[in-house]
Image 1 (cartoon, rainbow, N blue to C red):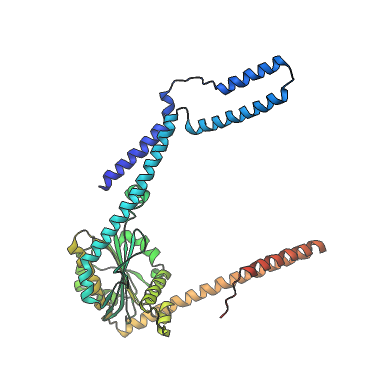
Image 2 (cartoon, helix red, strand yellow):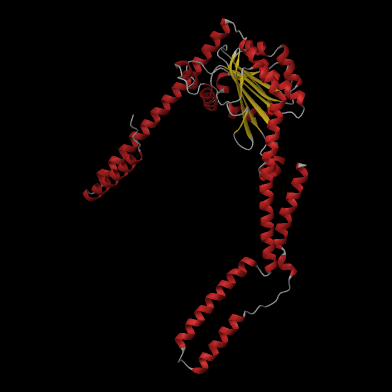
Length: 423
């Protein structure tokens, strides 16, 4: 159905372009003489014959007629040589506008149907595993035409379970019907599971073609991990972790079998007890605010939102939404299975000490880099002030006075922008 709609859309664009560009070939070259110009010339001749008695009146009439001619020429430039073609252009524009509006309505409806299909297929699974699902108004929250959020809490071993449905932008003609043929987009679900307890370790399993996306989504991943290999895992995956022990603990048994069996639906699985990027901090903070709305927040919860004290303990999963209901239910069941699997990870003290040393080295390097950047900024600021001082010293007394007035006005403008909040 989408291919058929794409072909129809291309035909409409092609016909509109062809008809608007090739209309001059269908008409003979005809010299058009404007009647107003003939009348204008006739009046000028009569003015010459009668003398200069009515020169001023004739000049005024000629100016008015000239203005009318310019207006007609302007209309002709918009309408072209054929008035019917002008209306045909308007008709094509109206048709395209209707197509865009209808596609937006149909695309939004289709995305809503996919989101409802996801919820109805897995609702009983969430009801069995969680005490509270959805918010006060609905189970599924529509953030935009192509983004839906689902939130549930009240289960052992996890604080909350958050799912984000990222659907194709079916409401956009360009993104869905044209751009999608070059860069394939698929309906995906991103799951974030937050833990109260999670052992020290970072492990990310992702598809090789998702490498750029992973680097963008988890920019700090490369600082804390290294590339690893697992013979039992399919070659389509890449593994990044901070220790071999966590890789062996996670990639075994049911999890390893699942990754090899349903590889066509899996984009990545990431387990981490530290923040790998800023967006997840904001996302976790928003979810906690929803969960504890109206209640006083403790110091531990504030630390968690600001990502201090190692409170950032998450398991992130990203799947393609399958059309088969059983496959979809299997993916959701696996995401819930990961709650207990991650919670039960127990590393040896030797590995924990190794991870601590590795992270301390990374933190020291980050701190050193920040200090160097701060010193560089201070040097640049001091250099700028010195150059400004030398510039002022070279000025005359009048120039210095004007410069000080300009500087004072600039500082006053900045002060006006500052809002004073009374407590």
